[in-house]
Image: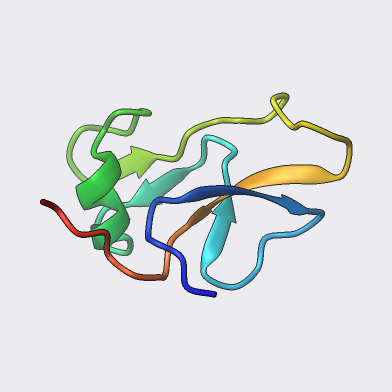
Length: 79
């Protein structure tokens, strides 16, 4: 199954390749340019070289489930 970059999906226990946990971590704009183009500085960052993922810790629907964001996938169409 193909996923769009920036999609947030619930998964059990781990983050597969091409995703990161939605834990508020700070990422390099240079290393995640496609994701940054979608999120911008909406969730934080230093305003120039880093941005943050949404922090959804504590919002899990069930123990053992975590939200992850797709970092490597299909770039969503912009119509």
